[in-house]
Image (cartoon, rainbow, N blue to C red; front, side, top):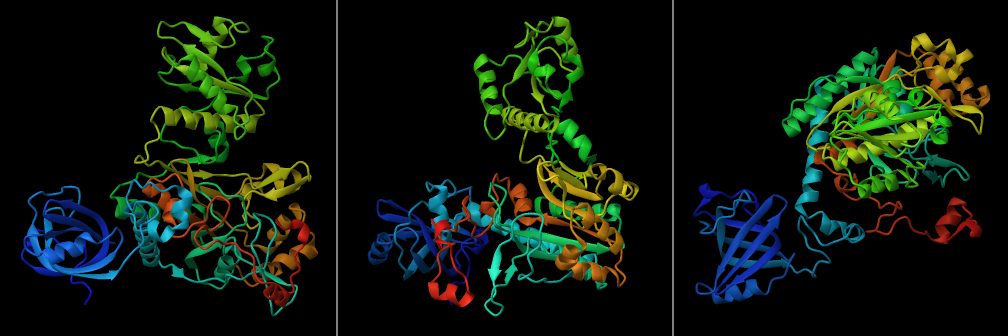
Length: 585
């Protein structure tokens, strides 16, 4: 056998045992006539000891090894004279009696350590080496545990794991599809699923009652830290349920994961409507680890000949506790922050509420101290606080204030990654209007049910209709979202009509679903969690890439296998694909 034990399991109780280990050479330290070697495998690190006085040839053999060589050793477990309290095996070492080189290694392009000297692109190119680092391996072990506990929880509650197709038809709305040509059906294409939405609804029509799947999904969209072209969902659906049933079930799943994985008891989740989330936080995924909520002061600003506020649809403020002492340089940094193209504000107004009770603002020449005092009172400011103010279009300015709020939370150390605040956001708008196209689009997807009391508004005021939809948010990250679905074919036809579908187009795209609804579709609803995001929150990561084994970079490329790539002309000919030379780089 290659090994009797792993490199992470030997302890003082194993002293004097003869063992065989195999793994990678992590570090080599030469000290006089002694050579110490750290042997690493997935389970941990064990120190090996070679004594020149006991066996010169064996010591010479050890000295010829390099980092990341694969070796096998046999030896005796001994107590270490110089213990290492930072690793579980730090009380013991192996006095090596035999050494076998299983495979040599080139010198790695970066150090295989927690604090590596490899940049992102280099590590992604040699991802198989990056995965040897403990910090990355631990993220994938965490991912495994979360998936395992998810399956356990759902299985115990009667959910069936059912696989749905990967090659499906392309559908409108939502993000762009990845398209797959069909050789057997020339000129026709499959799409890779953005989600199993339609199939899980059909499973409810089939009577499966409770479905889940940990499933790959694909979206051809621009990337960022929490987005990849292929990602993994915990996809779930239930029959004969209302919104409360779904929220209770999956709040329970989240509490179970925190309890079983992190040994943390999470209290019941607060609930906030979409309208209140935007009003108080400027975001539909609010970070509630700290307060600093948005306060509207538009009614306190007009009539003072300050054009910026007079012309603004909305004027809002946040109060940063204890920040009245901010220097001019710090205020200029905040101004530059909100003026970044990603945020888009034209400037920043501030009001200092000094410790002595005096008020100092960047718009003193327009507003009296009495005016400024009303602002401070509206924001519940106290001496020593700093009020930061933006004005403009309502939704746009609220989002800008949200970004400023998060920046201040970071600067003040209020966004502790180990402080978990979970909540539900409910009552989203069902539709959003594209003014340029003069038509409505589904805020989530066209199968989301409107609130029953808002259904009459589909004819008179579609933009005011609220969805029977909900999102789970943890620390400002949208972890999952879902809705109660439309199960009545008549209402589904109405929804397609509001979205601008002709009957013919609706039948062409979704006829199979609408036909299925005519055969006794039960009331049903569900939710999908982003497993990658869920793991990244548990691991305290800013990006989901380090909890995915082989991720893409921000350009959607796999640096390791150099994909996507060109294919042979013969293959294109077989598929009947002609590339336009004008569009090729």
